[in-house]
Image (tube, rainbow, N blue to C red; front, side, top):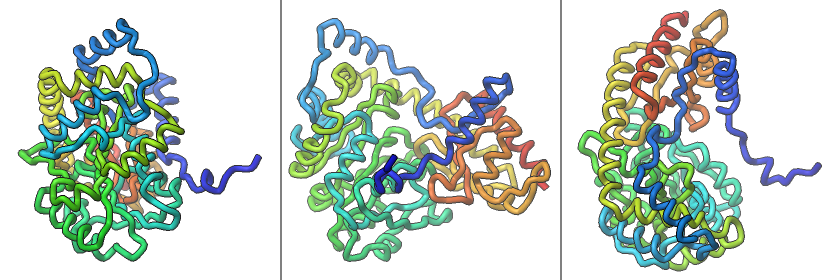
Length: 398
């Protein structure tokens, strides 16, 4: 069988092996604490579920316009104005089957063959694969831990060439939990404007921010940036609607139309019932109450993890200010051994830690082999037990 060159370029998830091993151990009755969760451990709020039931009852089960229902587009426009101080019209909004789908269609509509996309590292592991699918070229900028794993304006400027098309900006960031301040965002925007490049701004974790920090969208910096920014967001993290698969973009009209045209030939419209329920999520005051409650619980877990990890002399972290991840530098343990096996990098570290019943995500998947990613989208009881096992594992590393 002949496989396309494009398909051969796509890297399989390097976390699958550890995930499979963890599942096998659980099936055999072995206790495993998994820190890999990429979704909130809260049920979707009841009022959203009830709205979906209503959609079924009234027969809202047919095709919708490929770019989304007018009602949801209006609700998203209202959300941008209310939450971000940004004014968009419905023809600038495209609703997709999840934010990953939004990102894919955006990349296909924006990037031509050979054009460069700047990706700050550590990064969400899907970004490079989407660039490859668009026949673009990834330009990675390794961000320093002392800068909170955030790209600086100087680093961005140094990475730009005459082939640069856009920057992917993710704030709050998966996997580091980094949140860019307004000052930092404006400094990056200044470079983008001077160099004439676009920004794909992934803002999926915007509501999960702590320590009094606030989300600031780069699209708000100037008229130029608004016309050169594609905001990607969705319902998954904010309303614990991961399985509902609703993502959306806000973009200049011409680009939004191009994205909609591509989508009309791939997935067509997002699920009609989930779109109907998403209107309720965005417009009902209960949504704000749910977000506040979830954010508070995540913050308590985050603080516990920060305190515990800071007490382990062999590891170090940059304090996460958003999302629900902690990126932990474990490189001081490389070259040492556990049960006679040398720790050569994050993959080996994660594989050996699994022997202690702790499932971790290797940092190499996110472009930084010095680290592992821990999610606190699990119960505080599991967090405590999992960190205790991690501490015991580290104690036995010689």
